[in-house]
Image (cartoon, rainbow, N blue to C red; front, side, top):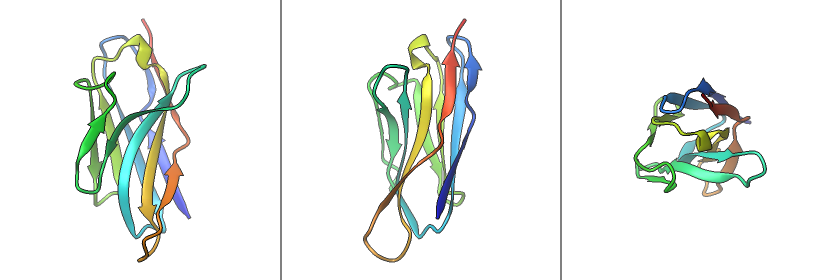
Length: 121
């Protein structure tokens, strides 16, 4: 079993900052990619940012330059630093991890429980 525990969501004013974290624990052999998605009411879930095992990062155009994804390999934790938050960043943010549970090529996909980020004045 693998568990993902997210934290760091909340209410913030436009222009403010928040940092999300997601810690993976359980039967983990190695972690491939880690990422953050978000889903606003009435909209589909969308990729916000991702980071590979080698540290390569990619971002959605809407957050490029404002959000930074990073990971702590020793702690199996991924972070999302969100700066200059806008009203349209309001959504439930989900952590996603692709990993191997053993010394074989099979990859498993796990999701966090979601954390609410609300940007409002």
